[in-house]
Image (cartoon, rainbow, N blue to C red; front, side, top):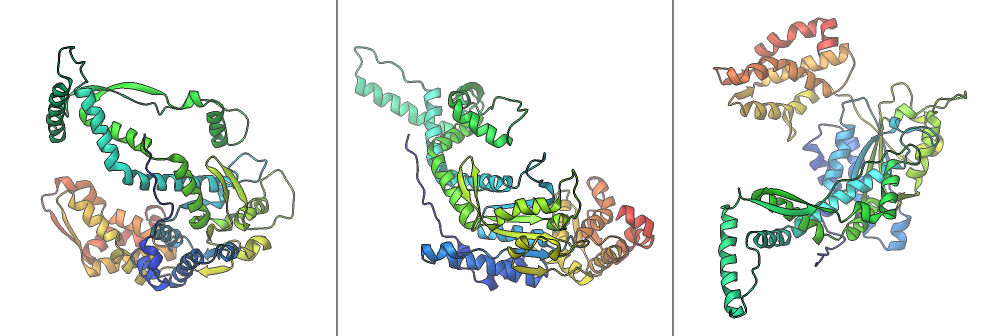
Length: 459
């Protein structure tokens, strides 16, 4: 079996983007927050600059990790997520509050690196799958033709060359009919790899991922190369065999090597809710201390080597973007060593009515565009007038001021309440052209917004 090898590093369009162009790309999805966008754009551009340095100098250039400070719903997560997509980098979002100290039941901090490697492996495998798809489909087609036209033995007195030509002509006719879909409903028996993993209950030991790959190393025959026979229509057989051929053509050792390198050089980890582990406890007790979690996270951010099932991963050049509201605590409550590892501090601004109007209309996936598209599937021509959008934004801002400020997320609850009737009655509406104007918005929302108790529970 020929395994297709691909280049380990590919140049992408993002390599030529300047910080200003990176900010312009982020502007398509996130409204406002210029300082945060500038910070992440510079961090991404510095990665590109580092890749052009001599190896010995590149090794010394550490990423400038970013700490985003701002209330919920202002775009912290979205900026980091869009940046990772733009950079085509492995990206992981984790909540700092889900980790516990070593020795306690819960997730250990190294699991974030293992998860990031799995994401990178999936990315690289998908890229290589695209590259081998044509060859895999060709191989799958040959296997299907073998099932539809099994090779027949030649008679002793038969001209072997003539018989082979006849068989080949018949095979080509079958190939044309197969591509035209004439055999799609015919049932064939195929042999495919069994993806099942024997269920094992582990009572003690380390994390389940380590247990899994240790068992696979110890008993390779039990977990690999098992196959089973299935009777399926030709349409499904074509897809199943193509997937199996793709798997054969991809060198998984190369995939793992590229993925580990990509994590080490371009990985991004978004540490959310970092303010929830800020604080210095003076007392002692049986509870997991927040300072203890910080001390466990510190070596990962500083740079250490983590053992994963795809190999050892160095975290020295992974970019960490931490974020938190810091309502109760403040960044100086973090331990000094961890503070020093986030040299870039960015404060995100709370969102008001003007930003809400832009959020509703400007981004590529703006809420108004989403609801227009959703209702369009029911044949409803939904439109929003300018005064209607202004009033939606005004009501969202008022509710945020009176109750808990949850930023742009308030727009989701307001929009759902506003379009409740249309969403429910949409398929049965006689009038299929609907305009959401200020009169409609006031009728649906004004009473709830005025009543503070109602808005606490409904909006």
